[in-house]
Length: 249
Ligand code: A5P
Image (cartoon, rainbow, N blue to C red):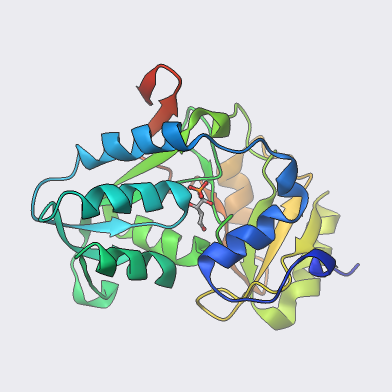
């Protein structure tokens, strides 16, 4: 079986925001749009957890962009950041934050990032913006991972949002066949090349009753770079923007 592609509907481009747009031209478009106001509330609640003058990890996506906008309005709050994408690095620089290479830093105290889906146990699906590999690396380097979402993303069981998997380009159809054998329908996010030069498969229809077990299993497939399940290393705190305020889990 060959991974399906959404090439008829998308332009070719290479950056995280474009990867997110490409994902949304596929089956993800059926999802209701997230509320910016709820995302902003979560982003502002995260800002309160950031000590003045700190060095932190910063993720990728529209919710994180609101967090970066809040940083821009609060000069000196964050002096340096390790970023999970070129897109976020650009915004952070514009906000006056210096970008560090992870290889030149010790462990980070704090990592702020969004998610595409989250459970109350703080297991996540990430990678809608295509930055999942660097996100997983920065999360692994952080002592505390604070995830900011709006309430539309909270689910009891992961899997409504197609699971992004970053693959080495030559292994794309091999991995797609392995996923089909597990009941998943892999759609190639054609036109999306990650910051690492790889491809993304968006996998529909996977049952994910045990995210830790599935993450470990899929991590073993030859050609898989990163699975968009963040369950082995879940978030430590979920800040959920709702109509009535920010919920903490
Ligand atoms: C980026 O690759 C993703 O993991 C994002 O963190 C995730 O897609 C959330 O993005 P939004 O904040 O734009 O919904």
